[in-house]
Length: 277
Image 1 (cartoon, rainbow, N blue to C red):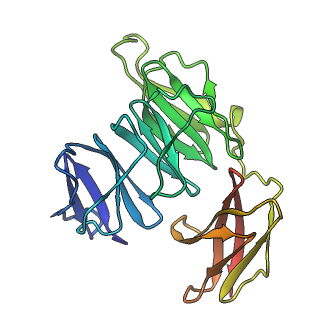
Image 2: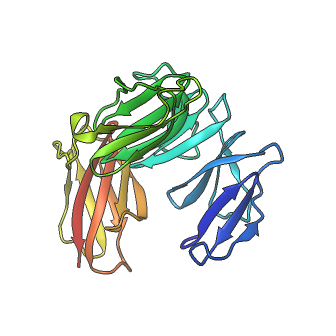
């Protein structure tokens, strides 16, 4: 599926290989009780579909789909990958997973667990969740594990979130707040760090620049986690699990230059850069 663009509408998927000029219907293989596909996301080389019957994933769009378990309210309206964690917004709470084959878990640190999630957005690892039913916007700051409720939004019926370099925007629903419907914005610098944050990192690169292998050694308190490598434009290359305090990534066949990395361990994300020669 690399290089393809996938669009959605109803229970069928359409695939384009020429940047959206021409489209063909794909045999999606989604179950017959899936009537709507609300959102799509890419996660570790797999296509993820949020539907009116839960979350499904596939690594080959023509070979069928697998169902992700753990969600009890199946309407999934928004999905977003932050680091190696996939967030899924439903009509009854926000869920997450660090491994697509595992059960989805409900986010409850700072959230009631019954929020109607309509939109997700992120900047520098800071996650914003927009909610309908008057719950407004929640924020999970990078390197933290507790959501905070952002106050001051005159219309808390949020349908869409969008972020640029300076602001987070909230598009709202006008019917219940007929005089207050519209787009609101909040300056990012007042609520999150807009520049790269460099916390103490619990690991060391064993050699930088690297040649064929990227070896990473972790502090004693880190026993497991995920190491992910990206191109400078943000495209994911590969990832591996941290086992017994170390990780090794095969860089053979990749061109020389600058690469980005990210470690997820101890419930936190740690970005880094390195050079391959």
